[in-house]
Length: 258
Image (cartoon, rainbow, N blue to C red; front, side):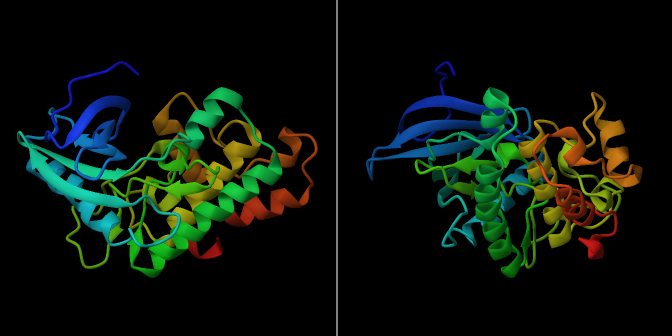
């Protein structure tokens, strides 16, 4: 992406915009004190004046920092505010996201998909063991390191035990294409919701499209609630019939059936 002027402390040099989305922009920069490349997420100034959004952004840092020692989860180095815009400094991973891979190449070989899913599932298990639910598992939040291993990023809408929740009953938080049925209905997200989101990612990596993909986010979210799980083996040649039973469980409507 093109170079932009980032609102960052002087410590973070030569910032270059690498992503836009969610609650802010992400820059690749050099930490002038420690001499390492980092990724810096800066809250969009359109949202910085909203106290609730600012609190949610900072909650991302607190939640993720609790997990920074865990393998497979993006490391948080620093948190702060500059020129009235909160920022979070994270480790920089050079491999891009699984969304980048899908955009470039489409469906992936099953063996590779299983390796990526294993990495992501292990990281989410560690987060769940620490009382944190991600709530927005999707390819754009699964980053690749230089060895092609997946790391889970962006706990920005995570629900953390012991941290104040900004989510009210009936509020939908997440991305429509990957919402569990309970999230789509404004219910509480649990580890089973993350498992559902990861199952949607698995489907997309194998099929090149989401199971309920629709141009309308509302229609897609509604399909997660009501529509039966399609047959993946019928969509992609070479996959055994057994994958349909696996996804019937992984994408089950009741959380306790997953």
